[in-house]
Length: 78
Image 1 (cartoon, one colour):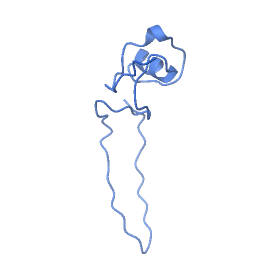
Image 2 (spheres, one colour; image 1 turned 180 degrees about the horizontal axis):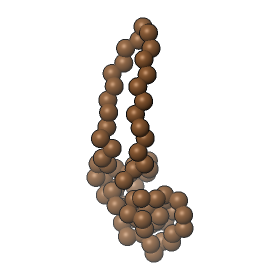
Image 3 (tube, one colour; image 1 turned 90 degrees about the horizontal axis):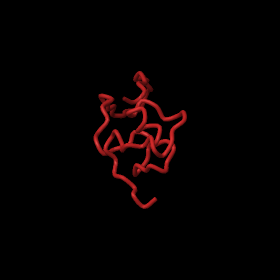
Image 4 (cartoon, one colour; image 1 turned 30 degrees about the vertical axis):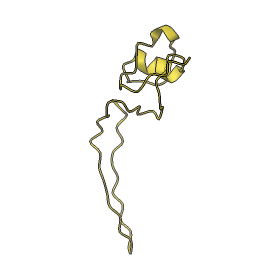
């Protein structure tokens, strides 16, 4: 699950803007960390895979990568 950030409501005189709230649910096939493709050679992907998407920092190895928990497309070129 992605870190929760509480929504904030702000008002301003003379302006109008639509507000859209998300449920916080992550769509399959989309990396919440901004990566276009998952890769066993990327540190963030190794850690994310090792912790099932709960963390993006720490120590992990290529062997810890078991696949993207979010279903992002795999980069197999490496």
